[in-house]
Length: 119
Image (cartoon, rainbow, N blue to C red; front, side, top):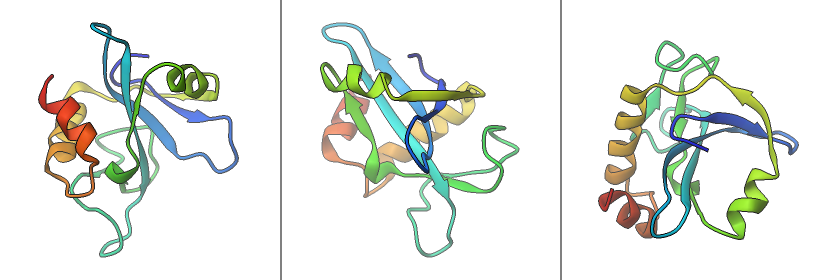
């Protein structure tokens, strides 16, 4: 899994997930977030993504920073075994904007902010 990879999981009503970043050394870690429908006033609006920015979504969406997953073994293997249908990759400009949003959002877990700040 590399930054920009996007996919559904093999679970009912899966959101669209994507890899924001990954590391190999000193250990293999992968940071994954998901998109969800933008509901003005009812969601974290730190990072709104339009279909024109990412063709893998059909409507205006937001990144669910509160549900980010910083995966390493054995959770990483369990997660990858659930990956289903691939989606178009996310471009670097959008990934950079999402990373900035993850650092800015009050909903991003502290361990994820710490991980991102060291990249």
